[in-house]
Image (cartoon, rainbow, N blue to C red):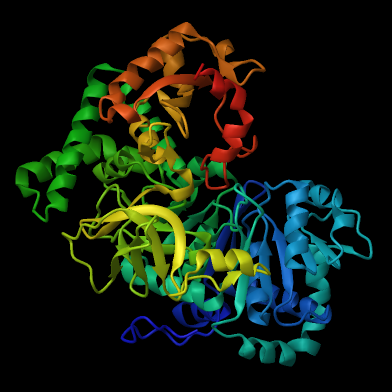
Amino acid sequence: MANTLYNEFKDPDYKSLHQFFLNSAHHIHTPDTVYLTKKEKGAWVDYTYRDLLAYIDCITGWLMSRGLQKGDRVSLIMDNSPEFYCIDQSLQKLGLINVSIYPTLTPDETAFILNDSGAKILIVGNHFLLKKFKKVEEKCPTVEMVVGLPEDIDTDEKLITYSSMIEQGRSLYAGWSSQIEERFLQVGHDDVATLIYTSGTTGVPKGAMLTHYNFLSNCYDANDLVPDITKDDRFLSFLPLSHVFERMAYYLTTYIGASVAFAENIDKVAPNMAEVRPTLMACVPRLLERVHDRVMKSGTEAGGMKAAIFRWSLGVGETARHTKDAGKSRGPLLAAKYALANKLVFSKIKQKMGGRLKLFVSGGGALPPHVGEFFANLGIQVQEGFGLTETSPFITVNEYNRQVYGTVGRVAPRQQVAIQNPDTKEVYTIQSYKSFHPDFVSQEGEILAKGPNIMKGYWNNKVETDKVFDEEGWFHTGDIGRFEKGYLKITDRLKNMLVTSLGKNIFPTQLENNFLKSPRIEQIFIIGDKREFITAIIVPNRDEALSQIGVSASAFEGDSPFMDHEALQHWLAEDIKKYNENLSKFERVKEFLIKRNPFSIEDGDMTITLKVKRKIVMEKFAKEIDNMYL
């Protein structure tokens, strides 16, 4: 697929994703350079490019022996690991299609994707995932062979271990090496690299067909907009590689030559940061919110002089941020104050993150502006971007040297964005990298996109493909937004828009971010579609409640999902009233329920990127919600 938007962008001469990897191994670095690091049995273990290239030879030899043809699908249900990288690079080298499945999906959801994609090989990462597949194995006739990473599985003619696959491939590779290289040379821009299935929260999951050039072009755009990422950086990987955001981050590391360390799991991200000392991380807003809340609690809970110094330092950081954003010099007095604030507070916070972190890239949801500003006050960059599975993923991102908090940044160099009235279909504006102006403001509407990063379509689903592409080739994102200061601002998802019974349009994400400024609120879910007024489900900040109003820990225990606690109700109502003042009358929360436990992936309430599934929550708690309107 050629770049049809701007011929002046001279892309590097890469035809496939595996060429990124080879270039890093042989030209940016040497084969003996460490690329991956993983904690195994309590110790961090390094993997060089040479190690990984040897594994890739073994895997490609085994896959060729199975008779897989270009375009065949291989499914992975695995946590992030060196094995995932080796398998994926082998698939990309042979022109096979990686069908990655979220490990959190149910057995039936897993079976649907395996059958819809027609996967011939399945690779599973642990006993639990293998057991999950076994429950639906008879429903998945296309799966010819299963490879399990655990060594102690009961193998049979259809199930082998990963180590057995490697050993078999090692002996087979020599006989297939010439055919492997021929296949590699046949892989091109327009070949599908992966199928990534949408969450399916509003219907049947759809497999987005993402090509090699979809990802290649997205990496070129990322490097143009964030040029400070270099081969000397270290990336800490913890978001699932089955999600498009982390996958693109992985391909970007192979393009620029940055090294990667794998977090043990999401609960170990904080200690792992201190151990591997990353410089870069891709993350979702909820993680940054948690870090913000913990730092604020740690800095203020002791009270007295310590809290006063903490608040003073944040004030200095805010002044320094405003000065920088205005393009002005700090001056000697502010520079001295900032140096002191950094010594007393900021450096200690950053040291807990390893001391080298220079950049978070936030995606997968809207980042509350106050959270991005907080990190900038500390001297840590958070670059928020926007994109979807179907766009490989990013369309816009805040530039490294220009942050506009509350926006998702500038249109990427190889792409175009249009704002369209969702009712009349009138296109208000078309913006590109070339047409950027820092004072540009547009009307609000649905965000449309064009570019070499846009998916080929949905796998075996022309009906759904035709729904998202119009006659002029624009991809309809389903997101509502507008341009402010030349940068794109997301209002909400079109499908999330609430229309009250009085005809008022309300976008819940904006309201939720307003209330999340309260340290008393951990999560909030806004309700009001076809209702006379706005209500909410609130998850209180448990630590704040325990320390501030003496709520006992036992109050959060129980089988019912909601709590009836008078002191807690009054305490939360104080902040609801406070933050209601920032809103129009029809946007204000009038009633709320107190949820005992947070929304979670495990309970089926959240997506893998920690966004609440609106439809699921509304159905799950329909009775309790209706009672608020009696």
